[in-house]
Image (cartoon, rainbow, N blue to C red; front, side):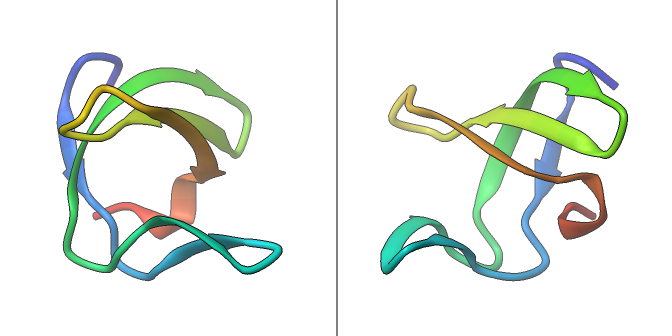
Amino acid sequence: MIGTFKTLNKDNLSKGNIWGRKGDKVKIISVSGNAVIYEDLQGKRFPCNIKDLK
């Protein structure tokens, strides 16, 4: 799963900040249990739940 591209199936929000929009294509960087670190197309890395990816 690491290094593959997935699509966000819902918006990734944190305290009013938008980290990712539904439908964004992201690259999986690491997986730890239910938590995933992904990298967006601009190279920024953010956490999300594994259930939020298609």
